[in-house]
Image (cartoon, rainbow, N blue to C red; front, side):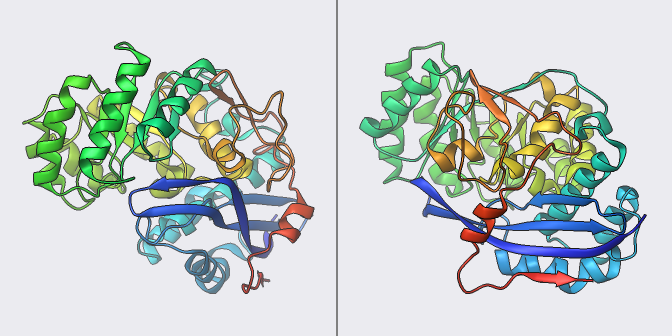
Length: 389
């Protein structure tokens, strides 16, 4: 068995409601749908999820270029798709950075391997430790009158944690929003704040000392991704636990965070880690250090949500914690999709979100069927699909 064709299709998925983050207003998701074809007719699928120049430094065009110009001809065409470890090792040796592109390849390989053996990806990863992963809700950045209703509704819908995005105004505005949400939800509800690395050290220290009294579960990435030493200094001067996201990418970054005692916990995204193979190594480092892990997403389709959905129930360490893999719900403006089916998505059968939990599909691979009509209708304007054979 070998891979004989690679397709990369640019897709833009509109959001029902814009999602706000520091300096960012997301109105549509520009992603890459990847298809790996074998000589016996099987096809593995993957969705890169949203692209971002400031988070990953990768774009729809760069992902397609890296895969089609280099990874596909060098490491995929003619190769046995079951040899995922080998292919991931080759990509890491010969391609620096570009983890979102690598992850998209890794995802499609896992989907394909699951289809070859007729089993869900979670079985390839070790089997179920849980039936579903508990999810926290992530609010769009906003003023108290916008965010408080979101937080209350999320709790009513069964989500066990609420994360507040900063950046809708001044830092004082962010503090006011945290204060209002805490007063509205009570003292026992789990709240976190995500800065996405947009504060400097002075801002972070002064602001977090104000926020300490609101009993936050954690502050996520208060400093720029490169300032691991600053995170360690900050952590020693505030009461709120510090979790690393943008700082925690490759294994050597995790080692530095652990050695410097720069974080109380870690955020993983499959695209940031570079795929499922590398994410399992990443989680082993977290387990070794005793650090809790939360899994986020790049905001994407039901297909994009699937790798994390499978890994977070298959990895025993990760299965204990709360995650934030909400892409389809954020795109479509929904709280669940068991009763209100999601129709306009890259996936025909989006994994089920209900009662604040995410259940991976049970079919072979990721168990996803493609919505080819949606893909065709939402082809990114001005960008051409590419095929390598």
